[in-house]
Image (tube, rainbow, N blue to C red; front, side, top):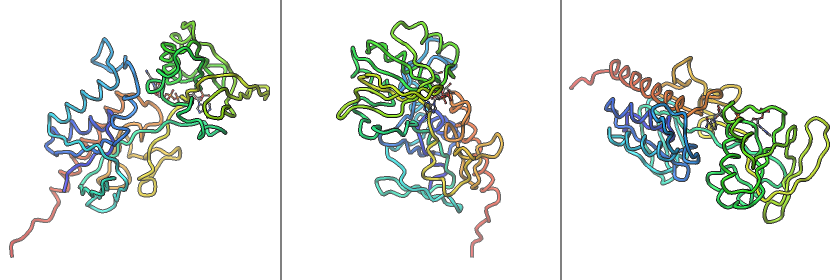
Length: 316
Ligand code: NAP
């Protein structure tokens, strides 16, 4: 029986692991098989994580957090959780390997997954010119003409990164102003390889075996047109990954895990949440790390409280 099992291995999960390991709770982190490390593994330079004035690469930051957690005794398993039974005092965490881990407390830090457009051609062309990760796939678009859909920080970051490889990068945004932070906007506007198509949404992807273009609808006039492209990157935000818990704990109206005020306590005793899976607003590596700390402290208090009220075994 484990004291704490942490599901997810981004900055929230690993920070929860550091804190609970230092509290002598010997946490087990289920890091995931393919997605271990979360979104930061797909990022390049992280410039705003406090303590790194020169910036740090996303994967390096994750490796540091992981090593720090292991140093204090956290154990990490690179497997996926396939089932969670969270009600009752003893939680059951089933892994893809078939192993069932029992725990007195579970911290959910499953993060979020790329949102996709949901348009015709998307399933067929995913991985064939269509991508949601410039860091992963940008290299394949050397000297090509690509587009990025979205108007937030992710879209600006993807577009700027893609200019390392592509000849041209067109940002397609459904409004005429960006949501991205000022510094990211300015960087994109100043880049001669980046241009913008405003008030446009992609309604269809064109191409049989690979992306060759996209059908755009003008969100003001309603007119449609087709543009030629070698690749399209979708950067329109993320959705919380709640698949395994959505029928067991309360979610907010927008689908995030509901927690009690500023705590990490979910609607089930002994189940805590941290990071992007509960955060529709801030979604930064540093806020995820902070909420991982909160979850570990809440779990620690919960376990201490259980011990304090547990009936004392009487020898017969
Ligand atoms: P976001 O801020 O939610 O922006 C999503 C963008 O996609 C918005 O411009 C939105 O348009 C557009 N969009 C949403 N659904 C769409 C659809 N179905 N079709 C077309 N466009 C759609 O998401 P994000 O850019 O992934 O950023 C998320 C959080 O991570 C933010 O807090 C951001 O600051 C942070 N982040 C920070 C960095 C960094 O600091 N280096 C990098 C990446 C992300 P509207 O504007 O019209 O809503």
